[in-house]
Image 1 (cartoon, rainbow, N blue to C red):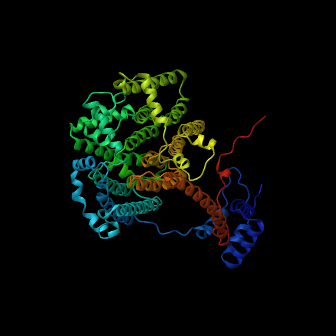
Image 2: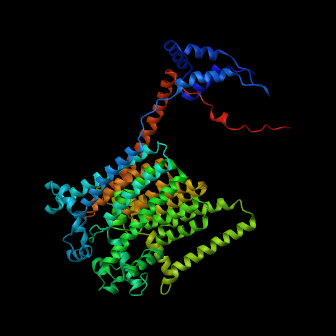
Image 3: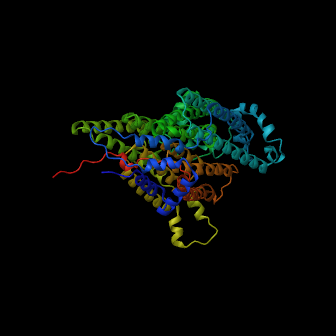
Amino acid sequence: MAMDVLLLERFLVIEYSAISTNEYFSLLGETMQQRPENQRLEQLRSQRTQSALPGATISPVGIAQQEAISPMLQPETKKRLTLPWAVFQLTVLGLLLELLYLALYPLLAFVSNADAVSQQKLADLLPWGSFLFWPSTFLLTYFPWLDPARGEANRTNAWLLVLVLAFLCLLLAVSVGVRMQRVRLSTGGRRLLLGCILLFAALFSCTMVFAPLTNTVFTQDLLLSGLYGRMVALYHVNPYVVAPTAFAQDFFQQALKTQQVAQYGPVWLDISMLATLFAQNSLAQELLTFRLLGLTAHLLNCFFLWAILGHVKPERRFSGVLLYAWNPLVLLLGVAQPHQELVLVLLLLLAVFFFAHNASLPGWVFLLLAALCNLLYLLLVPLFLMILVKRTRVLPAGRRFLWWLGILLVTGLVVVLAYLPYWPGWGIGGILQNFLQVFWSGTAQNSLDAALLHLPVHLPVPLLWILAPHHWTVASLVIIGGFLLFGLWLADTLEVVLFFASWQLLLTILLLPVYWPWYVLVPLVLALASANGKMRALVGFLIPGALLCYYFLQWQTVWSGLALACLALPVVLWGWSLFFSSTWQMVRAKEDARLQVSAGLRRFSRPPWLSRPSRPGSYR
C-alpha cells in the first residue's frame, strides 16, 4: 500500500518535537515562503512512492530527496579544543597547583602551643620540608594578612585562600578533560594526555611525601597505624588485646597518649607491620614508608580508574581521572597525612577491574581484602556477590556446584589467614567486639546527628531520644540495610553494582554519627568509576564540603554545626541543581525543536520502534 512521505514526516515532527499541528503547519508555511529552494523540496515531497515488491529496484526519488535535504540539515560545527592546546592548558594549571601545594608547607609545619614538645619532635623527624618554603615568600608573606607567622587568624586565612584556589584550578582542569572527551583522539594522543595527567599527579604526590608533619587530628591515623605496627613487629603483642599504655616509652604512644586497642581490620595491621619491618626501627623511615605507600596507591589508583572507565564509559576517562588525580583532598589526606582509604580504594579498584574482565575469583579475593582492612566495607560484599550469582546461572548444575564450593573455600581461607595471627587471647568474642566498635558508635562527632543534638532550640524528649547516638545508629543501619536490599534486587551488571555501592557508602557518610573528611575518598572513586552523571555531581558538591571541614578542623576546635555546612548544604545544593538543570533541559529541548522546524533544519530519522526487528506474528 502507498504511503505519503510528507504525511510521514509531519507525523514524526509532531510526535517527537512536542508541538501542535497548527504550529507545525504555520512554521512550515513561513519556511516555504522565506526559502525559494524549498519549492523544489516540496515538489519532491509531493511525489508518491509505491511499496517495493520482491525483486523490484528502489525508486531514486527517496535518494534524490535525501541528497537535496542533507546539505540543509548539516548542523553547525563548533570549534573544538585541540590536543596541543589542551596539553598546554593542563601544563599551566598543573604548575599553578604545584605552587599552591608548595605554599601549604609553612601551614602544615605549624606547631600549636598544646603539646608542643611532642609535635616539635615529630616535625624534626622530617626536616627537609623547610627547604621548600620559598613559595610562601611569594604567595603568603607578600600579603601581611596571609603571613602564618603573624598569628592564628592569618594562618586560617592562608589555609582558606590556598584551598579555594586549588579547588578552582582542579575545576578548570576537569573542564579541559570534559571538552577533550568530545574530540576523537588517536591512541598516541590519548597516551600523551594521560601521560601529562599522570606526570603531574606524580609531581603532586612527591610534593606531599616531603611535606612537613605535625601531630594534628589528621595525622592520628598515621601515628596509630605506626604504633600498632610496632606493637606487632617489635613488641610481639596482639594490639586487639593489649592496650598501647603498656608501651609508654614508645615515641608514637608519647605523641598520641591513647588507651584504645586496635579497631582496624587484620589486613591493615599486617600492612602496618610490614611498614615497620621495612623501616628497621627508624621512626623517620616508618613515617616515610606510609607516605610512599600512599603515593604508590595513588598512582596505581589513577591507572586502574582509567582502565575501568575505558570499560564502563570511555568518553569520561579524562575528566574522571583528573578529578581524582589532582584533587587536593586526595593528596592531603591520602599522601601528606596518609589514611588507609587510599589502600582501600586500590583494593576495590582491583576488584572492579577483575570483575570487569570476567576474572571473578581474583576480584572476589581483593574485595575480601578490602573488607578485612576496614570492616565497614563488608556492606559492599553482598552487592558484588550478586554479580557472581548472575554469571554462574548459565553454568551446568554440577559445574555451578563446584564453582560455589571453590568460592566458599577461598573465602574461608582468606578470612582464616587474616585472623589467625591475632586469634590467641582474642577469639570469637573479640571479633564480635571489633564489629561493634566499627558499626556501633557511642558518640556523635562532626555529623548530622551531632549538629541536630546541638541545635540552639529546645527539642522534645522523644526527638532527643531518637537523636541519641545509639538510637541514631540503629535507625541509620536500618535505612542502610533497606537500601542494600533494594540494591540486591536490582543489581545485575557491574555498572549497577558500582552505582549502588557508591550510594551505600554515601549513606554511611551522611547517616552514621561520626564523620571525618577522609571518609569521602572511597565514595569519590566509586562514583567516578560508575560514570553516573548524578553521582559525579553529588560527589562534586561533597568535595568542597570535605575541604571546608578540613579547613575548620585546622583550628583544632569542635564546631557543633559543622555537618550542616559540610554535609547538609552540599546535598541541598545538589538537589536544587538537579531540579533547575532538569527544568532547563525540558524548556530548552522544546525551544530547540521549534527553532529547528522553523529554520528547516529538522533531521528526520527512523523512530526507535522502526529500528528494532519486529517480532514474528503468531500463527494458529
